[in-house]
Length: 323
Image 1 (cartoon, rainbow, N blue to C red):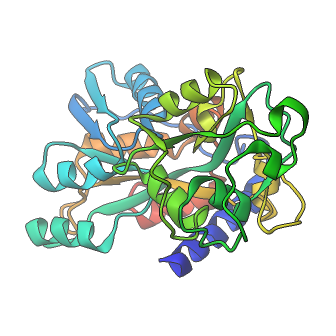
Image 2 (tube, helix red, strand yellow; image 1 turned 120 degrees about the vertical axis):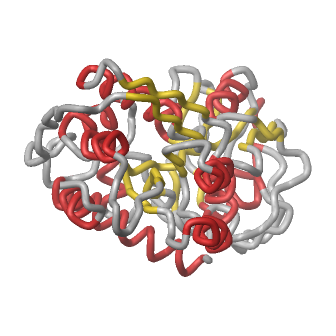
């Protein structure tokens, strides 16, 4: 699983290197062109991280197709595969790839796998209260703060801010830990990549959504939590991260992710049911075509995530039958 994550991380870095050569939204992306005969209801069930993006995309889609109604539920990534498999949703937004067991369930029902479409790049941010002066954290330190197992190799459990360099009144302050819940793809990604596959401490405060994590950190001076970069607010700071102990700290931005310096970058995905012979439902096809267009990626940029360059978006349109 860790090896697969490293491979995905390398692909994300390559994507971001291409993005860094362009403006925030690649001018080579095509403008979306409306087609006739698209109307009806679309349902999306899945990732909380993608909830805002799906809502904004639905609003953009409605500009082209006023007769299409999109309903969105963002309870967590793990709710997407069952909804797709049971046929109760058209789209399954996920902040991680489908697990083999989830694909097997889908394939057992339909005889072919669900179609995966990368739609944006996210960076998992470690948030602290805006008044917290911590300079940065290494991944082993993050692990020792959040986990009971310290699988990333830090020599001691970290229980106070003084152990990560803060002084004065901060030195003896303990941590209030905010985390996503286990149905979240972000929870799984953080567990795998920031805890090196280890186990969370029993003292974490699990939250049902990313905004709840950030809100908890805003309201707690000694709080620390994690969620997608798109949930940053003025009440929190995003902590620069280093991959290794003693390494250089890097801000969570596209340039640092592109150079493979920021350690927690990932693709965001939307899954759907595309028949291998009959192809796409017209509404689903046009939604994906819009998402992978200039208009769709402008939405990604406005929502605080990293856009896909045309080299990647164009390849996705070709590979997924969206041209």
